[in-house]
Length: 397
Picture 1 (cartoon, one colour):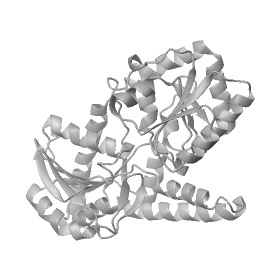
Picture 2 (tube, helix red, strand yellow; picture 1 turned 180 degrees about the horizontal axis):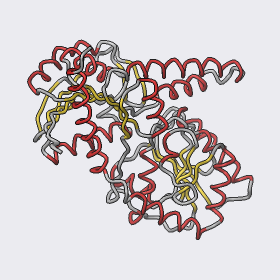
Picture 3 (cartoon, one colour; picture 1 turned 135 degrees about the vertical axis):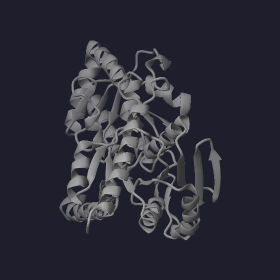
């Protein structure tokens, strides 16, 4: 397969610190290493362009009226003012296919220009915005009775998902990080769907980087400390473990967000590191014994694979994408609720041999997830998109 397609990429997150930005940078890096012509259009501190090997970058500054969507991520309602600048770059670059990643200001420009230039469009889903919105609304109105709030949050979640499905009818091919979500999108859009998993770097994340040997059992969490990550379950779990008479443990919580203050006031054994990256993050991953990820809204959950690569089994929610990563009873557990998190945490806390087996299995599983294999599949999807678009143009209307 000739992979030298000219790809224009419009990631909704690129310079921020999150799983979507990390995946986007990995994809650009893959194109550069292989010499594939690639244009990356993203939001940045200023409007500028540069070329690095086979990759060209167009950074677009957001306006002062931009409003925050998440930690470091904003939406600019005036972002369309850059459309002519992007159009000039696309005419110069001559892409074979455009790749958008979500319902946001950057990708909206990409979708519009793909239509204007009659170019094949592929869309990848990375963030469950509908579930994020529902969780935040639920937390915002937590002072109201649940039977009053639930219909409102449920309505909001359904309507946002309906809007997202309508948006994803524009691409010829849809990429999604788990089969459950892929089925929902392909059913709603009647488009061709492909899985786009995530890889993990087993050299960066490794159990060899562990630096603690004090006999303290560490439960860990890595991610944004926000309502949609369901992080208050960590405090509830700590309370249950203490009530069960367990004392030789602590929680290692890595990340920032508006839930940090509540967690710091509530938890008794937790150490908060704030945001970490690079070798310091890898070291702290390796120092964890059991990774806890109670989020019910993640479409994939890169942090679970990073924990696995560090030789750390994970306990995750049965809602969202992380449950597709964990091999229940082998590399961790899938829990339906707080009771499940408590049961499995206690099980691994009390059984060092089982924990050791799961640590080895987690590391072995991570070795099977390479980034190159992930992006080879993405390039296959690019070719599918070009082929489907060409066929549609030849077919009589």
